[in-house]
Image 1 (tube, one colour):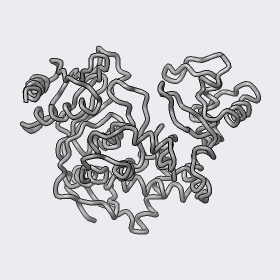
Image 2 (cartoon, rainbow, N blue to C red):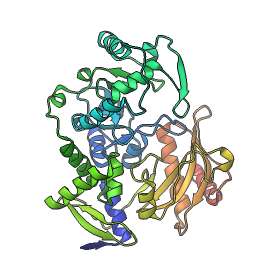
Image 3 (cartoon, one colour):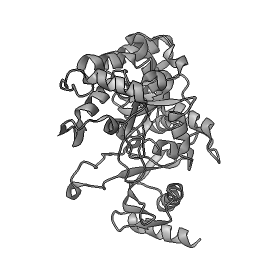
Length: 401
């Protein structure tokens, strides 16, 4: 069995995620497609303290880009991506629509992600008929004032919204896009999914599981079974069967990684570059760090998102982004885009053990690039964290150049 050192595994993983690709001076739809091919999915989240989650992995790999690329890819022909419950709520390549049919069937059987209570009779058909007649619509546009219940992490959903979510998860509706308030616009699948995709044969459950693990393995480069299972949120038995098949066909090769207690698998097309020259801030929802156990195993970086932690109990901050430099995570910074004042605020900054001397300077340069992309004019570093002093000095030095 082949053995990989931990630095080799990191470089393989980062290359698989697109951090070894040549940076395009002006990212195009071709750049977007290449990046999507690497990540496989883009997690969607409503938190907008810095930038919405699905935009950030693209920025981390492509650099400053026109966010209209994502809108065009998801809302105009030829549609390249569509939202579905792929990892969690996420943009996925539109050709995965039939591959997710087994998941749609599962949600149909359990009445959605949250096992919704029975709504009033006829509401499902009434909503479908209304959308069929009027076109893409939000729940608010369709809502007739039905009682709302404050459940599910504080979401205040009407019965209509709950049924619409059920219809979407079981494939009776698709997401045509979102409005300026980030509200989902639901429509019939035949008006969202390209006819060529709808015409594709529906794979069996085993075939679908095989395809999802295959894609997860390409996006990881090297991974444990747990890593592969998490990428598309599959069950352990389904993942294990797919991994065994891919090992048998030679698409996956069993390997050992120094320091990993679990067996690992290397994708046959994985690249091992001699060096990774990354300089990137990673969103809490970036595929490199979303599976926290993998993040710790690869980077010796313990990471937890603290959005839902009371302010006085947070260790590092509200919206903390790991800072990737080369093939190591060397720092973390709590960021906020204060759009009213035009400032990018680093509310706290912390260096990791053995962070190189250039960490503060490189992070300051990256904050400058990020601020420019977000249309912010000033960077403010608040005095919290062991890196904040040197980071503030580097930011000030950069502003004088």
